[in-house]
Image 1 (tube, rainbow, N blue to C red):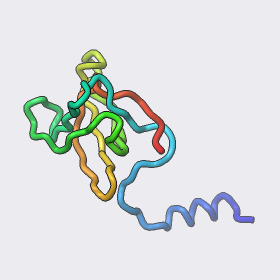
Image 2 (cartoon, helix red, strand yellow):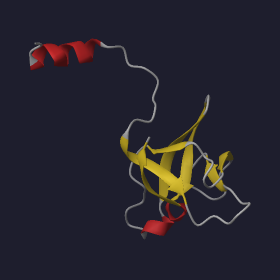
Image 3 (cartoon, rainbow, N blue to C red):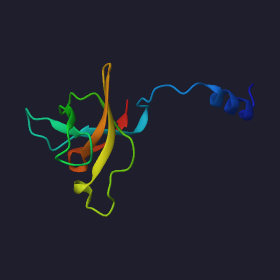
Image 4 (cartoon, rainbow, N blue to C red):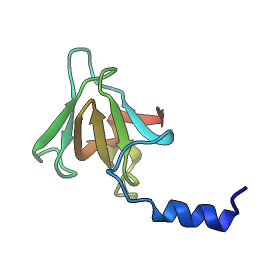
Length: 107
C-alpha cells in the first residue's frame, strides 16, 4: 500500500500534458440560440471581436469553462465567459456570452 506522501510525489512527477476537459463540473452547453443558427465564440470578450469558432446547439462537442464569467459587476446575461472548445481533434479557445450557455457536467 502506497503512503499518501508517496502518491502525492508520484503525481507531482508526472509531466504536464495538454489541457483537456475532465469529468465533473466545469463544462457548458449552448442555449437560447435558434434552430439553424450558431453561437459565435469570439477571440476577445466583445461582440465585435473576431469569431474563433461557431458552436451548433446540441452538436458542439465539449465546451469547457476556463475561468469565471466576467465582469461580476454586470448582470449574468451580460458577462463573457472564457472557454475552450474540444470537438474531435480540433481545440479552440475564446469567449462566449453568458446568456447563451448553461452549466453542465463534463463527460
